[in-house]
Length: 270
Image (cartoon, one colour):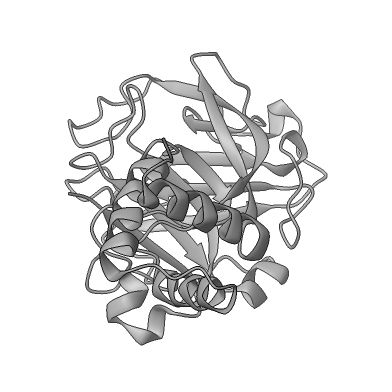
């Protein structure tokens, strides 16, 4: 008995996407492990030279380290630094520092980049007892050590360019004599959603995934932010606002210049 058409359609679409539009990305794996100030991590204590003040919000409130990436510890992606420490600090409020009216304005979050050589431990701020974090903070543990592996990524259906990819696939199939009805394509998209949902994780590079909406779909000024600088998903005991995904996006030219003053930060939740 032959397979249902929709599975044939899904197989064809996955092959089309893998060969035409797949992008390499780093999958971040967390372990509950004590870290040094130089390690890649979620939470914990940052690499912070003693002559540098702790990051504050525009209103003077202390920001907390959300994530730190030491690129020398991670697989290399084109255009990303091969070394250096990238840090994401956020306000511990009910939106984890997101300003939905001005998501590129670093008033409640800050992104810093430190180039090597790094200062020795005695020239850094020393770890102090951390104040209790709110129930909105995504991490249940003090810190998580991060390691990375490379994989291919595909866009989910909320990606602002997904419809263009789907249209190209349907046209490609028609040119090859394989015609699908709109019901076939709709069923395939449903199956594709399940497939992509099973791949949710923390990532650098590749495609950004969304739960409800890609902000670049409804605001054209965000379209240039095409690079996934970091995504933190609701995985395991990490819980981003209402089972959401925290995304930091950057323009390619800004990444090439290692200029992290212009970053789009959004949390998309259900």
